[in-house]
Image (cartoon, rainbow, N blue to C red; front, side, top):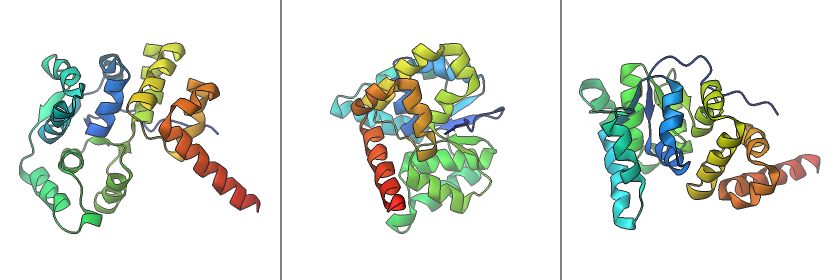
Length: 212
């Protein structure tokens, strides 16, 4: 199956959610990936705080994120006006239709500014489609698979970094991305990746049910 990154011809700014940042930081060289995109990259204060809370659990993402902010690879944005209103709407109400602060802030800022949002969570993707139909959403895999990143890193380095994100951060992979990811990292490494093993089992079950 052919997979084409949704980042094709990307020119507008990207607002990155914690889920995507954690995956990229797990690659061991998030800076190289982000710089290869060559577009403005924004992160909300809510996401920075969310990642920072991991310090109490011994997680190191906050320490790795700090230099990217200091070097202005990532620009921290505060929610104001319409984006703040959208944020409060998405964190209030029934649990099935609300999001955590980081996800809500990411979507609210991207929608209000007319930017794209980089987010991996399925619930956030659903709510974004319901609320902001024209908002362009991309995933971590879209970032890794886009032409500038592939050209900058080379296949061997990209494969190693993708495997790190899968192993250490349990990066989510959507069904239409599965074959591309496995071809990149090698079938022999599938067993090391919890999210891929789960998706592989689900695909096998669906195929068996179809054939039956």
